Length: 425
Picture (cartoon, rainbow, N blue to C red):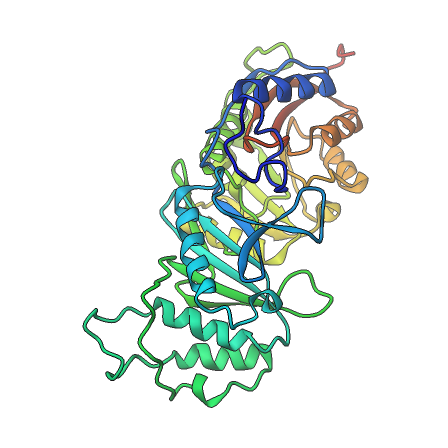
């Protein structure tokens, strides 16, 4: 099959676009079934293109770029990303036009990464992560501010334009420790905004200190420092630079699949068991902003969302309130500290660890709870195959494969682990 993308094979994003989508699915399913030695109960494909709701880019030589394949230091200019949503592509074009008309600024030096996002709920965002101490930061923020101000078309260069936000000016000065020049102060009159307007509803930035992976705080230039997503009937807020599922439609399918497993409780022979979840506690471990725990909370007496990243757990607390969930609590704890939570009665666990899988101490904590059922969600089937045998008291009873990343080798897998009975092998 002839690939459609002009930079396929050079860009580090897609790696199997030369295969038909049917062949991509066939290979992924075969690889997972072989690794887990289990036949899939459900195979959920994705839209082959235009599915991705987030794109991380880099600016080099005043061009928006992606990393080259198998390289951490070489980059290739991004023309059109076929797996990104059309809305994201529009935001990229707007930002590209601004960069191209302002090449005098050293965008490459100032910006570590620029992220474009668009949700099913209609929210959009651009996030700029700056390098601390760069002289171009204030100039770029001022330029972005001008590009979101809307003036009547009849406004001429001689007419007064809106003032730059004193909040932006003061926060920029405070956060970057750069002396903001008089032209960027709260009393400075900006020239009329350019004809290029950034339409993103939310634009925010963070400044990364040397040696740190993420900035300590985010500042909104426009809108909020978070985005809103709606998955099925639940609403979620998450940081504009934070983790969230990159395929919204696929995420909805995954949520419904997990919900159905927990609602229709079955043993390893697929016989429906008495519904015990109403008197049980759900543990959503590596819970992020509470996506799975909130969605499944109405099946349980109590839901505990456990996440080690503090900003994510703050969003989880907000999302509990937004969705009017009365039986959920969010805990900022590492998975290795799960034993600090006192839990009584039967439990069920949803595990959604990072690609590296679960630390043995986290696995021990889960096993000590003796949950009736474990739902393990993984984006790394090879690591999943290594982790499953560590749950010695459980047997694999169902397998769902969700192609959240069409045109790539990546895939999302959901396995159901059921507690062994006395007669189980």
